[in-house]
Length: 462
Image 1 (cartoon, rainbow, N blue to C red):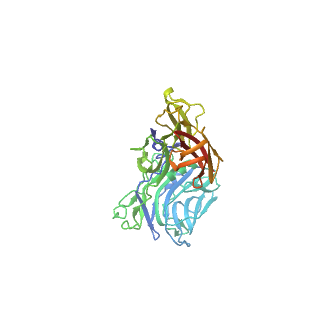
Image 2 (image 1 turned 90 degrees about the vertical axis):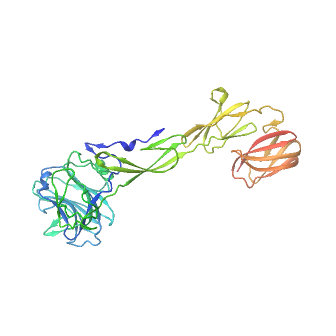
Image 3 (image 1 turned 180 degrees about the horizontal axis):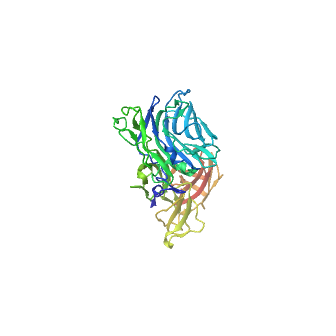
């Protein structure tokens, strides 16, 4: 039995505890911003990161502003006073995103990313570690620059869906979800896990975490005035939202990403996939509850490797019907001891008895049933001693030569799996022509029966 366990574990990365190593966003709410006057403000939130040499910020954003022309830029989230306290992400071109850190001395560090696509969800993480400013897009570092210093101002507002520059509001058009602010520098592994998972609200260094899971998506939410944090104590003020309908309101947020995996088992094994015990190939889906209130949906493509253990008997020759494998013939009457040198798809017994084959195919092994061989040494049966095949190997045609004149002879051709491919009857002479032009290249058995005798020989068709 094979047990599926790897997705049950949570991942701890240098103290950051996440909801496991799989995507973890349930289908919950986000906020839709109308690009007119919607924004969320968290007054004096910079007090949380004032003096810190490690700051991180993450969010999911769904941009749908077709034309970006100043001053119609899109503010995603962050702080900005354009003097001594900037830590923000904005979109200031059709496909351009900028992350800026400005420390208390006025020194500016910028990372700019191009290639943003509209009408789809994106994950961004902005990380300052005292030496570098880094921008991550969908878990990948897309740019970094040298940076130093701290933000000392404790009175700056944290904005979501807006950023202010010289009196202009960069109102966002689109949706935003899962905004977080930290006083630790997230590592690349932690950023990757946040992109793929939900954040544990109890993670060390997490100062603010807004999940936006309030109200009813696209419903009447006019009674809601604040965006409530899952982590932290600072409410976000909902400014100018209609809070009803499909825009300027709570709407469907980031849906659960499906994590795709593929695995294999051998025939006869059981694959434990959550609550399912699987024995057949197929595509299966399972939802796994994770710590922190997030669920992970996993789609498994399972391939069961079949091992054909059928054996056919042709005279005294045993034939495994599993091709392109490894073979070991064993003596069932001798505690299944291996038959020395019997490692091919066929085995011609030299003594009567019961034989089986251990077949190993694509890493899976299985043993056939025992097959009785009872005709070794009986009169009237000769294994290739009464005739010869020339040429061999061959293509097109071969000739069967006998040591004596043949009357009413019969020739049969078999594949290695025991299937008969052709038969010739009522033959006479000391040489028989056999047309093999229709045979696929490979190994075959030729059986000749004449005057009470049966002989067998191998033929290699090129």
